[in-house]
Structure formats: C-alpha cells, structure tokens
Length: 90
Image (tube, rainbow, N blue to C red; front, side, top):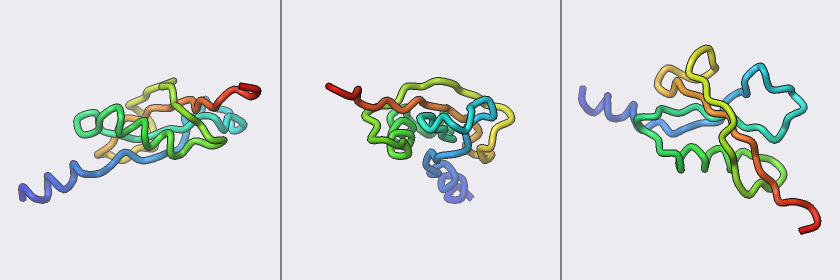
C-alpha cells in the first residue's frame, strides 16, 4: 500500500489547456498542472519553458487557479505563464 501511495506522488507537472479567459490568438501563454506539495517552482517553470513557442528564454507566472480547471485530481493546481522571447534587434 505504501508503494502505491508513493508512486502517485511521482507524477510530474504537465502542460494543460489555457484558461478560457485566454484568447486563442495568445500563443505566448502556456499552462501547467502541478501539485504544490510535490513539485518545485523550478520543475514547473521547466515544463512551461519547454512548451513555449518562438524560442522563449524565460517564463513569467501570470495566473494561478486551483478550481474549475482541466487538471487531474493529483495535480489540481494550474499556473499559466507568459513565454518571454528575446527582443528583436538586440
């Protein structure tokens, strides 16, 4: 039984759907499901950055929601990030 419980906590953060408030044209926003007890900020940001388009160099947290999102029960929190790309001409 203990092995089954500890196996559940090893579920990594994953990309999910953006909140309904995000227009479909906003391709610079990525959302990630996570469990705050099992995942570090670095773990979550790494998943977000890996899923950004346009060669993003960083992510900035924009919105967190814990209710009425598409996240599974074991990762019920969703954070949405804005993907930061290098400025053109620099």
